[in-house]
Image (tube, rainbow, N blue to C red; front, side, top):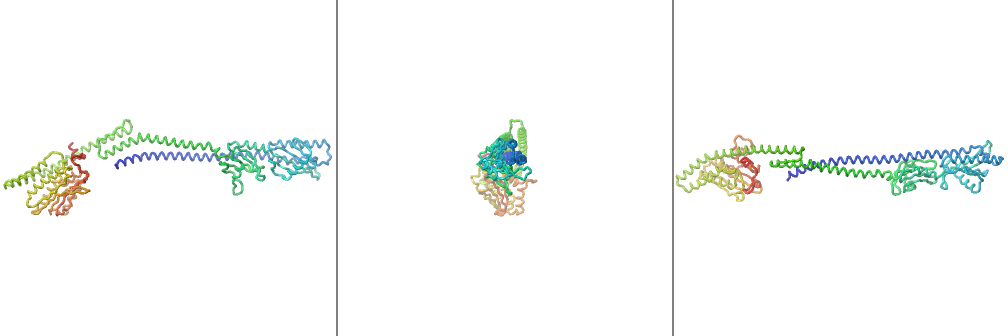
Length: 597
């Protein structure tokens, strides 16, 4: 289960890396697009300010030229020598000369009024002669004209003034003919607010925008706007810098909207200001967010499709190959994998199948060779045991018959027959543990008769639940034989051989121990060491048993050798309970059975 989880996690990590890579690409792409969008917004905003600056400069330049030209003509008007005759009624001009002078002034006023469409009217007052001259008429001043003149004279010269929703310029002066006599007059030049607003309208070409001219001295304002927000609201939100002047470029929030504002400068009539709603110029750029989102969705869809496609053509075939390798790792060499498409994975699958066949062939060869070697060791062990034991057993049986001890001779012969029948059986190399214990009992009984008077045998009872468990043949009797030959053979009396069975939650144990004193601690240590050595020139019976147990139970069984509490050597067969199989269960695939196959 844990291996499967690792393989699944490994497979998932490939997809995770792929998703991570696509995520990085998408993030980088969207970051670039976002940066480009921000730069575009900044560029458009800057272009908007540049446009407003250019319009302001153009308007102020052309506007100031016209205004200044009209004012200069107004000032130069006083250099006309005929004004002296009109301003001095006592010079004695006849009617024709007076009429000619008045018409000349009227004509010049008409010329000044036609200089620019910004000039609405020109009015010339000659209070001493009581004439009021305009481009369209020359007449005598009445009381209201005197009152208007006096009102204009309050504003003084050299400035643009505002009153009655009109901008005007007032010049007061004198005309001299070389005589030290002053004749006062007043020249009023009125500018057309309608024409000024029309020019503002021409410049106001952006939707939801506005332009206004504000005269701070008179709190007068001329405007043209298409925005919902009024110019007064914009003016109220304008901010000044450290010098007390309005900042050229500003962004203000007024009337529920956000506006880009450019303060163009102060002209003859006042402060020139342009503003445009940010959403109006950014509306088409704002739509780019929709395109960005659509592009993001498109990239995610494409990435998902690509990942699913690569999962189909790469991850799934790779997963199948990894699962096949996992089965090989667990020992299953029978699972071939195939692919219908003729691609790289088909080549890998065929190579994997060939590798699996070759591994199975090599393993079969190793199994056969190993099994034959083990069988040879077993046959050698049997050959070593049988002749010597057979001779001694027959001598013992012969002596009992000579003594006419027929009952014990019959029992002895029965044990001897069971013993040799077990050794010469050509069945499986793996038998129930109960049969192995019964064979060891027969051997112990035979040896007990042979060494009667010198030693005794204590043979415990095998727990019933372990009788059917499968074990390799000849794992217990050789341990008894080893104890008789090397531990008790030289024992003259009081020899003891004990065979016991024990179990706990960790293992099942069969212990063969004696009270022989021939083996020292160094001998026991050497026996222990021989169990762990993998290469030996001569494999003893104990080492053979240990290896067969380890092979059959996959290193979860074996022998252990310690000093017995009886004084001799204690050799134990230990087996982990979960590895033991009874007769009704399927055996694991082991070398002996593979070799026989």
